[in-house]
Image 1 (spheres, rainbow over the protein chains, first blue to last red):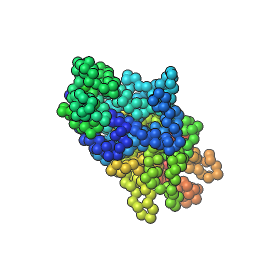
Image 2: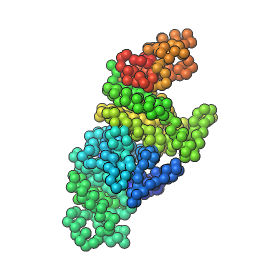
Image 3: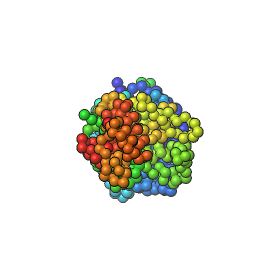
Image 4: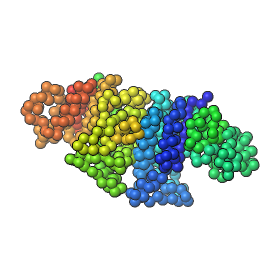
Length: 262
Length: 262
């Protein structure tokens, strides 16, 4: 019996006021304990441009320099996070907006410099996540809403991938709850046929996964998502669901619209 | 026996990295339950200027238009608040950064338009402050750190005076704790002699206050602070202290450096 939903919503929803409003209404209506993790969206890039701070990429990977970490702290941790909280409150959801620095919930390590210096990017190890303060918030009836930020414990905020935060929180909380980890993305789920958006595979387990791989049904984009899903399950998460943001409410029930992985 | 300190620190400390670092070390070292409320500082004005958003004032009062509320949400709620949290965590204080929207702790009303339209400014009524979620955080060993922001319950973030937030929280929490409300400012306390910074009056009660007023000892600047202090005390706050940010630690003891009002 699932008793906690850990839900990640991406920048594409954050960037679109109509999609966002619809998503937040549905998220607010989900019964029981839940946590939201939001991506950043393009607002930080736009804000950086306006402030004359150019986004730097190496091999397609964004570099978080000193000016950029201040911008993402402002935009993700302030503007986006607090607007989401205010809107969820307006929808009757008792949201509390956090970063991984708050209550030391997600300590991280600044990514070591190898070929590329990613700058102020934080890598999270699942066993460093503090479940106790999160549990205190959940048990007090609050819905934590996380910006994709962590800290190094030495006073520095770090930029961290929202998918990673979602899976790390889900794994850490699996000690105390039976967790369904839900990734909202732009498709309804994992598809039998990449050209048919309605050809959703509703259930994937390890055996089905191996068969789908052998049959070359899965696209390159979905493979790492499924690998991450099985990694989360092997670390204690009860179920992972991949589905559309529009379906977030039904994806917390037994009759899912998306793809349930377990 | 005081068992909660509600401490407000102003923009002058936030704007000065050396003062801020010293203050945070002292704040972190304070024993027992505590809450920090921080002012905004000049960073929001600077950021607004960089983004081409001019600060507007009417009769010396700042107007918070739609562009400005986004800037203060970013800067106060994101950059300043989360940097304070990360630095307090580095000093061993289990800080959690909040606005009044988070967990619906400080519902506010957008200030009604009379002669001046102040824009997105929130007025707080003490009896609307939610003590229960704050109590849950304090009892879980967390130190709430508030940005000077509230919300209207309909999805809008509002700009609110940090002194008002501090006194409203102190009054609401007086139902559950014996509270000392500490205002950090640029003097050591209320002075016998405006020209002698060390002539601190260590204790003021209603009778002493009336005598000081009759003797014209008090400057115009300090009168409203003392009026607010007595208003807080009449609403249940055990003690109010006015003192320097440098003295915050000793001002949580019995031998205060500042002015204790009760």
